[in-house]
Length: 113
Image 1 (tube, rainbow, N blue to C red):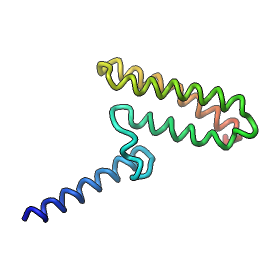
Image 2: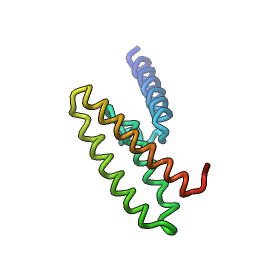
Image 3: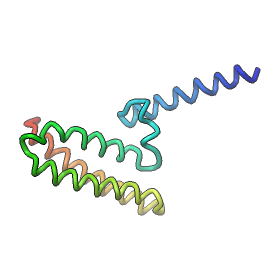
Image 4: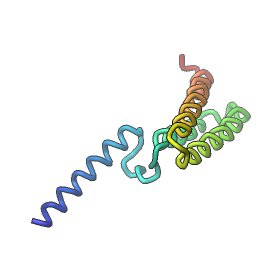
């Protein structure tokens, strides 16, 4: 009976990991990189950072400034993990707002309307 229970637990764990990865918009193999309260923001920042490569050749100055800002936002997300709930949520809202502004600017620079 124990092997059947262990196998069932493994299947449930795998399904939960797939669910979390889908919610974060990442590959299941990367699920270990993103944990904690700020996992969604962390994944969003990393994804945004990867998308900047398309503009590096044409607008390297903006890309450089944006990468610096993303590094600061990621540090804020990591620091907020140890904050009291109200402060953490406020920090996450602020980071989310900054990301939205940066994403809109990226779309504008990519001529996506």
